[in-house]
Image (cartoon, rainbow, N blue to C red; front, top):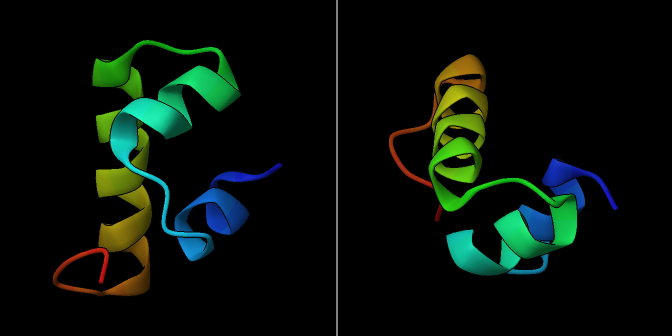
Amino acid sequence: MTLWSLLAHGLETTEIAERLHVSERTAKRLVASLIQRVGARNRI
């Protein structure tokens, strides 16, 4: 699954990290980067 689809399914950062096989810190950075790229204020 992609980061987009994991976010769309409402997964928590820890679950995203597990599914992408990355650390929780890396997952937080990926999510933050994606949110910033699309110009959103938060992941909701």
